[in-house]
Length: 283
Image 1 (cartoon, rainbow, N blue to C red):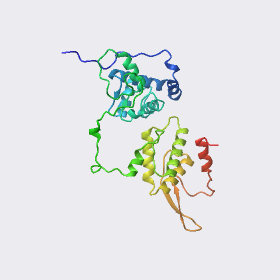
Image 2: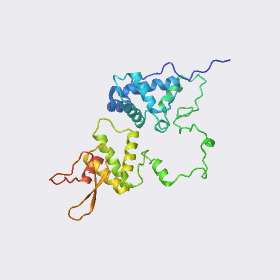
Image 3: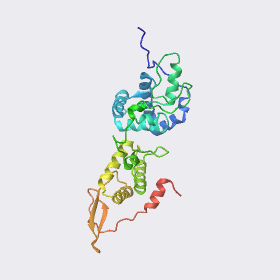
Image 4: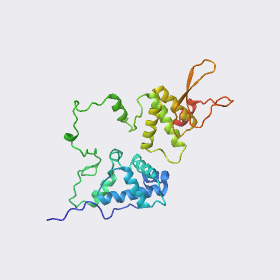
């Protein structure tokens, strides 16, 4: 009986101009040596298995990386996940496969192929390049017969499709209402500019769900989001209805816990359009 073919590597090469790579420069500029260390640990994990790393959940992977580096240097799973997703954003990992908890890239596969050129290793799964090392469309690990769903078995409405589809630039659409989508993105942009680390996708999804639950209509959600944006809040707060002394009509205003309405000065007027133009870099 022949010996089982080893899929993992005992070593992998590192070019002397490694730090001249613009992607590595971007990673170092954004997260410093700690970000680079997280990326290095991931490379070792990947090559230990072969040319890709498949994990049950990204949170478990983050915990393992923290244990490897030491929680003296990195303590939060969210930070590790931010680095991993950023690596995908700048092209160090394939973003489509990363969303399936599979970590690899065309570059990783090319280096793996160069080391295992004489080994009879099965390289059919999650391939991003062809046998000549040229870019190839990622293969779906599940066969077409396994993923076929008949219309009678499952109905997907337009709203579900809109929530899950991506634009051509690979940006998620969070809300179907264009004005609500625009306002929500401005709020996320404000949050990212006002804190050290950008929000990770899971945090943005939680904010989206929170905003959706607080408003009964898109108009209410837009008002809630605009108020949080203008005031620089880190979360959303429900609208409260207070009667106008002159007309008796109710007006909706986001109510932040701890605010009191017993003040004797005029509220500040914010130029929302000017703030929006500044955040989006408009002239």
